[in-house]
Length: 129
Image 1: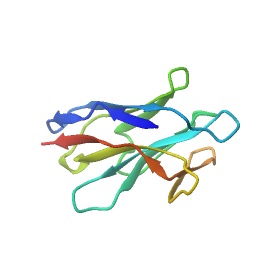
Image 2 (image 1 turned 180 degrees about the vertical axis):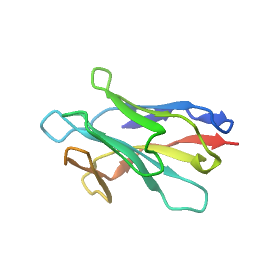
Image 3 (image 1 turned 135 degrees about the horizontal axis):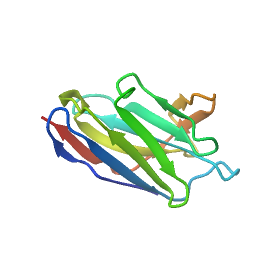
Image 4 (image 1 turned 45 degrees about the vertical axis):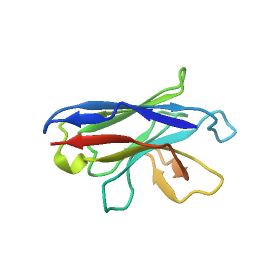
């Protein structure tokens, strides 16, 4: 189960931190991948960032590099996305993502871990004006 929070409306250049409560995830080793995706009106859902709890390695898409930071608190099973220097083009519904029996998206972290995603939460809206 994935439950997002922290969305809202901010002005150009502002910051927001999204959170996602994660439960029931894992690859059998006790480690897991989680990530963030977003979808703007009329557009396809796109990846933003992902992280692997085994080694903390992360991956960011070009739109997120240098501005967004993904992190994971393994003790509380909470995924976060710190977003800085927000732009109007960041306006979208943001979804927390995790592995599912059937996965339709994947990202490879900096250390080579392939993170697959097939399950998304309900989303939290981010609006930048």
